[in-house]
Image 1 (cartoon, rainbow, N blue to C red):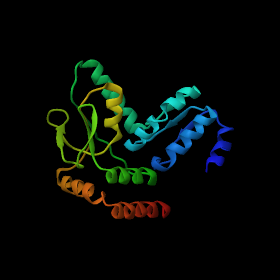
Image 2 (tube, rainbow, N blue to C red):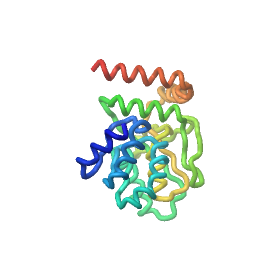
Image 3 (cartoon, rainbow, N blue to C red):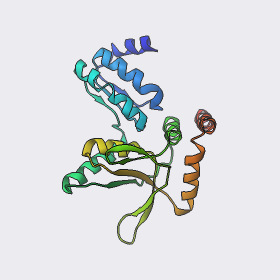
Image 4 (tube, rainbow, N blue to C red):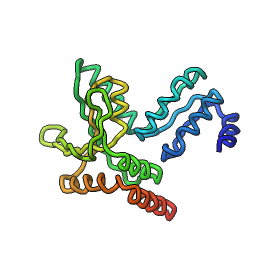
Length: 212
């Protein structure tokens, strides 16, 4: 609702968008913020939306405001860590980011965003470009000696953000996973490419959220 967003902007000094999935909310709210000349920040973790919001960079600059996407935990933490490593180890040409997190509960918006990311397909940064790659095609071990953990590549926005910040030309991002679950993660990557299955998974997530 463009008119509704415009009215809200008249009462705001800045915008913090935490309402996912961002495929539905990021562009309308960002455009309204630019029109009102109000800084925009979100906690987006969807790669497609990073690219879409980047197209608004010049408009935001002309309006004299900041347009900051990915200020949430995952992307911001991964981006800061990638920059720290790149600054300490000059000349890096390849980087792997592994997220080892455990969430007891995930919001409906975050779950839907993850389903949509799998539907769009996996990717890596290769030779300074986004390159399609099947979900969990590659896995790797990382961690301290005696405490190695398995990670599998998934379509995380951390890879895109780290590339934008560090200019490291080859970056892969993934999540910690048990070895027994690796085949199921790969299967999920294949199944969720189907629009029918992805839409069904989204409806199930929304129904589960509404029942809580």
